Structure formats: C-alpha cells, structure tokens
Length: 287
Ligand SMILES: NC(=O)c1ccc[n+]([C@@H]2O[C@H](COP(=O)([O-])OP(=O)(O)OC[C@H]3O[C@@H](n4cnc5c(N)ncnc54)[C@H](OP(=O)(O)O)[C@@H]3O)[C@@H](O)[C@H]2O)c1
Image (cartoon, rainbow, N blue to C red; front, side, top):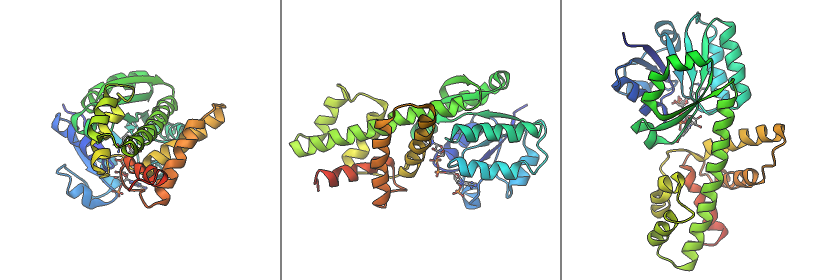
C-alpha cells in the first residue's frame, strides 16, 4: 500500500517536490500556511494543519528558515503524534534540527533532518542532492521517498550534521556566485562578447553547476526567483554562526554575505540571488 505522506510548505521548492511524490504514486496530501497555494497546487489538500497531522503517517516540511520550522513544530507537538515520522527538508541552523528532533522524540515520534542541494530545476526533475541525519534504519526505510526527490542521497549520521553539511555547501555557492559576478563585470568592462566569455569560462575555471544554473540569468539579467537573496543571506548567516562557534576562519563567507547584505539594502531581497550582480554593476559603474 502506498505510504500516506503529508506535505507542509508549497514554496518554490516544496511544490515541485510534493508533485513528484504524487506522480511517483505516493498517497499525498498537502497543507500550506497561505491556503490558496494548496488550493492551486493541483494536489490533494487539507484546510488545516491538524487535519493533515491526524490523517498522515509521514509528514514532510519544506519551510523558509529555522524560525518557521520552530513555529510549525511547536504547533505540531500539541497534537497526538506518537509513532509518526517527520522529515524536515528546510535549510535550518543545525541547533534547530537538534531541538526539533528532541521535541518530536519526546512525543514518541521519529525525525529525519534532510536538507537539499540544488534549486528549482533539479527539484522539478527529481535530481536534488539530499543529505540526511537521524536514525539510520529510519533513513533506509524511507529511501523510496528520497530517491523520488533526489539523485544523490548521503547519510550524514547524527542530528545537526546534515544541516551543517548543507550550510558548508552554501558557503561555496554564495561565494562562487559572487566570484562569477566579479568576473562577469570584468567581461563587460573589457568589452568582450558576453556569450563568448561565458562559453570560455564554462570550459575553463568557471566550469560549475553554479555557472550552468545562472549563466542565462546573468546574460539576460533575468532575476526571476529560484533561490532568493533572502535565502542565501539566511544560509550564510547560519553558516557564519556555526563557523564562529567551531573557530573556523571564514573570511570568504563573511565577505560574501556583505554582497547579499547590499543586495537586500537595494530592495532585491525577494529576487533570485543572481540579482547580486546589480551590486557588482554599481561597484564597477556598469550601466
Ligand atoms: N529555492 C531554492 O533554490 C532552494 C534550494 C535548496 C534549498 N532551499 C531551501 O529550501 C527551503 C524552502 O525554499 P523555497 O525557495 O521553497 O522558499 P519559499 O518559496 O520562500 O517557500 C517557503 C515556504 O515556507 C512557508 N512558511 C514560511 N514561514 C512559515 C511559517 N511560519 N509557518 C508556516 N509556513 C511557513 C511558506 O508559506 P506561505 O506560502 O504561507 O508564505 C512557503 O510555503 C528554504 O529553507 C531554502 O533555504 C531552497
């Protein structure tokens, strides 16, 4: 019999991921805080959080940040959740993951922390990379879910490790995009054909998933949101906090976050994080 899965959070990532589970044959129901998104999702939905929790054996959350995750789980623990499994796929602070695990386990339920790497297009295609922490046998028993959502799935061990790994990945992501924006400013100022320059970079030191994903956005200055400035800023802030506590030198990450700070200050918060190129344009006086 198909697993009864509940899904909470139908944002840029949650909607395509939940849709993939439905298409793969899971018995899925969704709920979203802004209920219109659930109504318009094309997926079976319920009107209330309580209804979803009562009716489902596995509940997956894909929310915004640590605060939204704490907000939802503090409501969830008010219900009878014994023997249910919760999987949070939001990018959160590792301390939040540990806290949520404790809240749920105390109530007799199980928890997997499973943040994802990859943006909207890999989410649509079921090609995400997923890092998972929690009980290993629970992880193995739910590989059927993860393998619909992602292509590469890594078990990371204790709670907190998966979120830490995800944040480490995003320190590379945030800094690398900034480096690409600086290089692209150089290209523009030097008067090199932009498409040609991106092709050269693709076959040189710029070759990366980041350039693959963002080259069209840079070329067309199309900042329609896949992964927002707000989200990368949040991830770098969590990463810096963890790095500071561990005594990791993190000059690149702090500098990188400054560029996203400037993007926020320039009203670019909700746009795709490639909009940080507007900050580089200002710095180099590119029109
Ligand atoms: N976008 C990407 O490319 C990407 C890639 C990898 C990982 N991630 C991570 O995945 C997570 C989701 O990203 P996204 O781009 O899908 O974000 P998003 O589009 O902003 O969606 C956020 C979702 O969280 C819900 N939410 C926020 N606060 C809430 C609260 N207090 N209570 C209940 N629901 C709440 C929103 O509900 P409403 O509709 O009511 O606002 C919405 O459904 C983030 O942690 C992000 O860092 C994103």
